[in-house]
Image (cartoon, rainbow, N blue to C red; front, side, top):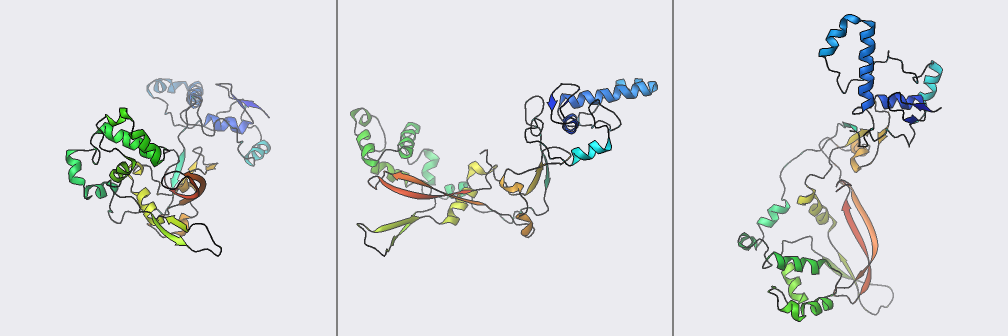
Length: 312
């Protein structure tokens, strides 16, 4: 049964969806409904007309249920039918207002919330106690000589060039004539090692039950060190979600939305008050490692933190 909004004439799947649409905050149709209700009250009580001119209608006011719209539910049987019906997925008002912008979602914070028990060592703290922190006061690009020196070094370190290709590039006469602080790939990587430390790589030789051409080396980082590095990274300082919440699409709280890690809530109900849960994401991908391996293949195990907001 198709129904239409009496103000914007937008088409909806059923009358109940129109009622939800008219109750949405931050929409022109809600303001129109409020004005229509005020007009009907003036017609019913002419003495209140003077007061209506001096009182503005609140944008968050919900239209009175006594106001009957042409497409409102007209019988108890029909009302019961639509109450048992799930909200359509393609309902245009589930997440967006008439102006095309996202409507503010309603949320409830659950009882078990994280607490701060003390101050740990942040990335900036580690940077300030670094052995070369004194040099950074005179040159903020240390161990590089200048901004241009750092830009080229950062580009080469993040590129897919092998060490041999990097040496070939740095050996060009045009590049050698420029005042860079490094002239080889080994020198560049040595300078990068002077930067504040990150979780260290470790390795061990894996014994196999069958003969191999070369020893099998297993490289890894401590997962807890990786989680700590993500947790205290300055770029994620305001993007970490530590409090469980229930998110709803409307003020009526008829549909719960599950999106971010902390919108579930069930797992947090199993924790004591003051505790939180860090979600560890593990993934793997086939990667061609060109630097110092001769172009070998590896299946890297990648680790991330689910508490970092998805939009980050």
